[in-house]
Image 1 (cartoon, helix red, strand yellow):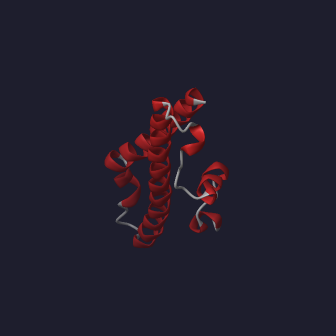
Image 2 (cartoon, one colour; image 1 turned 90 degrees about the vertical axis):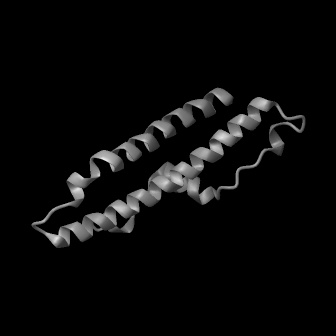
Length: 106
């Protein structure tokens, strides 16, 4: 179980890190368009939606890392005593990748 959790954490870390690098280095290429202020506002809204999703993913990643740490400590109460405070709906949303409303009208 810990091995499977480690694989998930590794993949999520890679994904979250890629978004962070994109925001730091390349996002300006898409956001700064002097020719069309309307497209700027539209793109900024999309980026905010995506950023919110990645923020949620980052929170889930932290919870998974905490769970892995607790599993590795082999607590005397056993695995059943471990808790993750993330609603099931958040897991389902990320597993099924529900697109933000602004993308659904595209």
